[in-house]
Amino acid sequence: MPSAATSSSDANLAIKFDRVHLGFEEGDILRGVSFAVQERETLVLLGETGTGKTLSLKLAAGLLRPSEGNIQVLGRDISSMPERDLLAFRRQIGFVFQEGALFDSMTVGDNVAYRLLEDKMKDEEIEPRVREVLRFVELEHTIDLVPPELSGGMRRRVSIARALINQPPIVLYDSPTAGLDPVTSQTIITLILRLRDVYGVTALLATQRLQDGFALANFRFDAATKRVVHNTSNGTAAAADRIAATRFLVLREGGVYFEGEPEELAETKDEYLKRFLV
Amino acid sequence: MADTPLQVAGREEKAEPQITVAGVLVNGLKGAVSNVQDYAILCGRTLYAIVTPPFYIQDILQQMDSIGAGSLPIILLCGFFIGAVMVLQTGSQFTRFGQSSLTGDVVAIALVRELGPSLSGLLVTGRCATGIASELGSMLVTEQVDAMRAMGTDPIRKLVAPRTIATLLTLPLLTAMIDFTGLLGGCVASVFSLRLSAIEFWRRAIDALDFADIMQGFTKPIFFAFILATIGCYKGLTVRGGTQGVGRATTQAAVLSSVLIIVADAFLTKVALFLADKLF
Image (cartoon, rainbow over all chains, first blue to last red):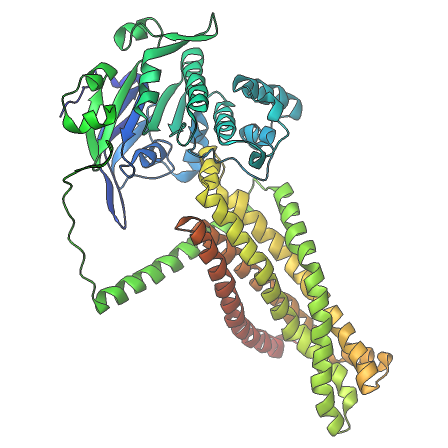
């Protein structure tokens, strides 16, 4: 199967999975998964339902521990890190859950401010930061609403705002556009582009929608014009232009089936991969 | 052939595992031991979180309001009528022997030693252990617990410890309230049914109680509170199977905490009587 080797040195790796296994009572879900994500890079995880995309994200955040293999995030081995250290370490990672996972009993403002409130930051410092990230996701007016009053798309955007509040270097997205209409999906993808191109975050994005991955590869957010424009290059040339590269990784039956550039996936002759392109 | 682009055709069929009686028993036993181990770990981590910072004072106060103040109406109402029923049941027997004045003694001892703690434990279980299990279970299935962990918060400290502390602080107070309203109900029933004077009832009720009874009556709720809060949290945080699982966990929390409270009551009574003999 095609598999692109990671060319850059380990020093620039934000996330590295090394022969990771993960099993439950029902059997092994991941069987020796290895991949790496460079700093400022976006890796799109594709795969059918049940192939371990969400589990891979949870492993990268240290929410699950691998049964074998090890995982390095920002140069630290998190597979054997004690939970107490992991709690502190996770503050460097933003996680956007599939359905938002907002705290229903709190207002949007308190949800977004959660990390800052936990850090006992002063109210007068919290409010401007919360308003700033809510403005970034264009939801400043919802600050006093509670999550049940929001639509599905708004909940995802608040979830993105919550993940952004302390400007983490890595953001993990779990099917951020699943179940949303095309217009709302486009809004979410634009936000992810802005995050990547304005803040330079490294991203691991699990999705079943190939068009989301290609949108990330083919477009970029132009900070000067504040518009999404066609990306003229990807990969090495893009990195030189400070435009993050986007790569794809396809999971199948517990392993990595494909890893490579968008062009390789688009031009694939593999029958299984072609199904994603239909 | 696959129907959609994302379905896989030609996947190898897995052989169905053989089910045997011995296999089912062994798996059941393993599951039970694993559950006890997980519960013990949760209890240990909860006790550690109760005595070490950070403390979530705001959450503790909120839970005290929900568990303590929220349970007060049912505690007061049930206590009053339990006391009244006890007088009606025992009074008729005492009257046959011309000893109806003993009713106050019996009601006081039974309520303070036994009925007050166990009834308040069971009532609060019905109202709060189920509430805790369903609330935490819903948070778990909607990934709110994972979100909390992802943002660097320990769910044991944030969710379990405040509920346990709040129950530990409020259940003894609710027990005092159920004891008082039980005696009040008993007094009303004595006056109107047995024609005893209220002063006589209260005098005998208070005289019948000694320090060992009070100690027993207020030690038990501490254990019951720990049981109902931790079982509620444990069942909530181990929900499997989505919203259906939340319903199942809620029922299991109510049943398991009620059974454990009654079992613990038997052992605590034996220990309390032994200590009362030795110390008082």
